[in-house]
Structure formats: structure tokens, C-alpha cells
Length: 435
Image (tube, rainbow, N blue to C red; front, side):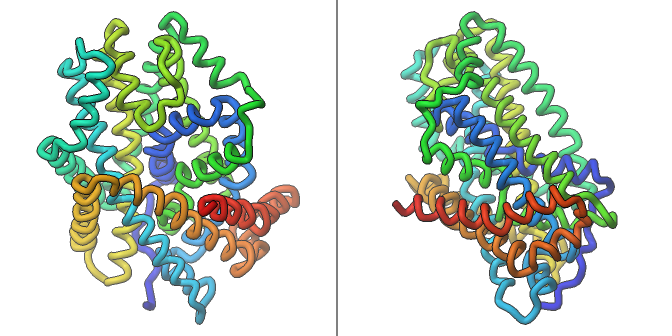
């Protein structure tokens, strides 16, 4: 394809960090982490998750960012540069497909959150019984008028931000979204911890119950790490190509992202579990934890309408930062692949997103089924290809030399992880998903 070097770039490393953390600290940490943690034993899952991020997540994220950083190209051109005259560039197409699917099929989640911002702020849930709240969420999924109204708002916001470019759009917005999200989360945590009985939630989160540990805990933690960090979702590789400064410490940046993801997941849990336990609700309520369980809590605490609105605004900020990150990555590939303007690339990407998103809204089971296919299979294969490419094809030593990692201890940790632990762990997940 003869792809040129990526001309887009971040104005500063702070902008890069805010953007890549924003991409990672999104739906995976705010929506998925609390219910996965709740259904896998709380504290035991958290400690397993931290170990997985350190042993697997950070080394693999370092590798993915480095592919873009070293070549200064988007996914397909990056593979062609590092391994010319081979078929490895097909991995770039797989990353792109995964990104397009995730960007499109997750739109109902954004719609639910926007709807809940409106409903909570206007007192829609006030006076409703728990069963009525559950029923209202069920009926929302088939209220196509409301769903498409908020979907259009979400698509418009995403398109406007991405069309502004990297430094003018993604970087600028994330510099606001991430600090705002942090403040909202702290406020919600403080209010939640003041509710009588909330300390049980902290015990659940931080006191390990070893009887809850199993190999499924490890498998789920690896899957959650992949989903949260966004391994194989294209964005990290593209953002790497936007770093123009030479001799940048990519491992340091990846470690900060890994730490941020763990922090965001724990903070999300601290927003939710203390209130869940204070009101005697079920921590393993699954996906409905944030949409069915929490409105009950906000109904009962003083100032619940304000706290609830803040919570869902924070949730949307996190989700939006993910969405614009992954959308930007797809636009970069389309723009470079077809040699077209950003404006045209945004129109094509948003057009595909609207089609996939509409299917997710209109077709029962579409979201769940595509989520299983994407998270359990395509993302896993995508991550496996990155691990094999960085560890064995590009070569672990070449990769470590290219990003100036000289310390023996660090080299050994990343080398062993990327070459051996990551492929074995990913292969184990893949097999267990079939079993």
C-alpha cells in the first residue's frame, strides 16, 4: 500500500497519556469491571487482576504501542515496515475489524447511560419500586424512539470530536474529560461511604476469600484486562504512531496506563459496592448492576438525584473517551488506506458505525452475541498475533532495543512475558472459551 508516515500527532506527552488512558478507562472499567468483580468473588478477583495487568497487560501494551511508535505508521503499514514481504499485515486488518465492531455494537450502552442521565436528573425513578425500575430498563431496550434519539446525540458528539483531529479534538477533549471524571468519582465514593452499612462493601472488595479463587478467576481476569486495556483494538498502536518525540519511554507510559486501569476499576467498585451492600442488594447482579441496582440506591439516599446524575455523567465521560479513542484509530486507518481526507474518513467510519449500532439496537441478542464473538474470540486472536509478532517475528530483543530498554531486569520481565507467558495465557483463554 506504500503507506506514508503518520502526519497526525499529539501536542504533548500529557495529551497522549490523557488520550490513551481515556481510551482504556472507559466501558471496560466503569461498566464491565464492577459486575465481573462482583460475579468473581470481589477481593480475590481484584488481586488476580492486578497480577495479570503487571505480568501480561503492561508488557503486551508496551509492544502494541511500540509497533506504531517505531514505524510512525498505522496498523497495516506498521506490520509491512517491520516485516516486509510477508502476510503479517493481515493482522492489521483484523485489528481494524475488531475496532469497527467494538465501536459500533457497544452503542446501546452509551444510549442507556445518556437516557439515565436524563431520567435520573428529572426524577423519573423517584417513587418506583425495585421491580418497576427493572421493568423500565427492560422496556427501554425496545423503546426505539428513545434509543435512536440518544444514539443520534452520541454519534454526533463522537463525530464532531474526531473530525477536529488529534490535537484539536481527541487530546483537547480528554484533557477535560479525564480530570472531570476523576472528580465525579471521588465525590460519589465519599457520599457512598457515608451511608450506614457501606463498610461491608469495602470488606467485600479488599478482604480476600480464597475459597472464591479458581482458574476461571484467572481466565476472567485476563479477559477483563484485555477488554480494559484494549489489546488488539487498534487504538494503542495508532496512538503510538502519534508520538513524535524521539527516545520516549514507552514502558513507562504503558505502566501508567496499566496503573490507571486498575485504579479506575477499583474506584468504580468503590462507587458501587459500598452502596450495594448498604442496601442489602446483590453484588453479583451482573450487567444490570449499574442500570437496575443503582437507581434503587439513588432513590433512598439524600440528594440521590444529584448523586445519581453525577454518577451517570461520569460514566458517560468514561465511555465517550473510549469511543473517541477507538473511532480515531479507525479513521486513521481508513484515511491512510484510501488516501482520503479526514472529513471523508470520518463520514465513512461513522456511516459503518451507524449501521452496526442500529443492528445492535434493533436486533434482540445482537449486542450479547457480537460481544461474545468479539471479546472471547476476535480480541483474543488479535492479542495473540501481537504477542507472537512482537516476541518472535519482530523479535523481543529488536523490540526492546528499539524503545531503549536497557536494564536487564526490565528486559527479562518483558521478554519472558511477551514471548512465553502472553501466548500461553491467551491460548489457554481461547481454548477455555470453546470448552
